Image (tube, rainbow, N blue to C red; front, side, top):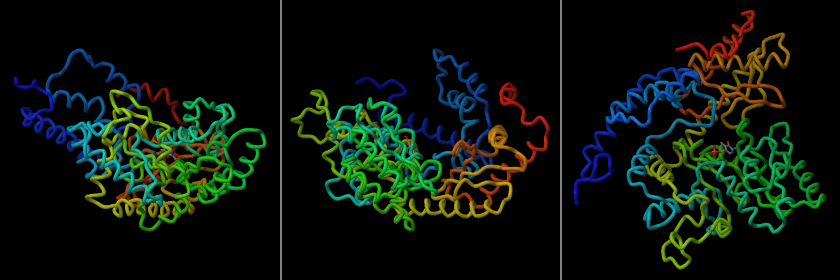
Length: 488
Ligand SMILES: *Cc1c(COP(=O)(O)O)cnc(C)c1O
């Protein structure tokens, strides 16, 4: 055999591979060393777009160091760093090193999890993790599941299984979900051809959990109208408030109406390994399916997620036999029969390495730590006269806003939007925005187990400081468009 060409993963290129990956790692560590106290630079979309657009993809740079240097200008110099305590906007977490070790292996070996003949032991590593997660949920040996790209895909697949259990025509099917549920439920209804009207928003109570009485009423109304409640989606950890719907009550009502009960635990699923707060998920084992995002509260890199079902045979709703891949008479096990995807990355290995090196308790303790942190910060915020808390936190989010005297709702909305934009532009902190009952709020999503109360209060201090400056400066804030036009 002739020598393999440069760049191919091959034993003859082992030295090149080591050098390439080593220099890439050094390059990354160089950036990592320089992020201190600055989770982002606040690059404008315009600047970022211009720099990328200027690259001629038909003219390769050739060398790795040239490509890495270019990449710094296009991305890494201005990347958002999730290990920084002041990055506190979204459900994207700092990651653990065992998972990064797995990433090296996953990409190099390039197993594909659709069939055993493309993955060998990887198939069983994934299955073992699914079984382990199922046992943590409280399912028995009938359970099964599959790794997915995220909560969005898990919710879609769960609703596809629910759809498969029904014989009624699509236009009569309804999905009942909490008003604070995730929008991927609406998207799934669209993909399934059920239409936007298929999703019925069930009101939440004062603690922002689905109100079981309202669910009972919605189910009764649905059937009284001659419609079929196909599924009830409970959320275990809503994206804004971290609220956990009353799982036993919701599951019992779903069962009484013959509806599939899905628990979207994309966010709260980390409680499955929490040493101190597992009890908050009591009743999750009564659901027909559960979505868990390991890439949120389990500190795994994107993407790493799973859908677990109480009765594995229901996964048959996504099975299709293809002669070239998974013929009916194959002696080999395969995972493609359980998945919406065909070619599928070995994301499960990240969780495997994490459990083998750190153990589940360590992950759960990290989550407990960020929930403690959230409670401590929120307690401080309640004492601040110019800070408005939308609700007491339930997991690791704080929905709040700066409310100086004399601003009405409309002014408060633009005031808080301006504060957020200023923090982003300065590169000092990343906070999110949301709306509650039509009112504009800011949101902290805390997922960093090394962040301290003082560091998080520092973000709030920046919010108040920016807010006071904006109120004090007549004509402020400058319009966003003007700031975007400032060349860097
Ligand atoms: C994040 C989230 C999702 C979507 O999950 P992805 O992994 O982003 O696809 C679904 N539901 C809830 C409650 C979430 O917080």
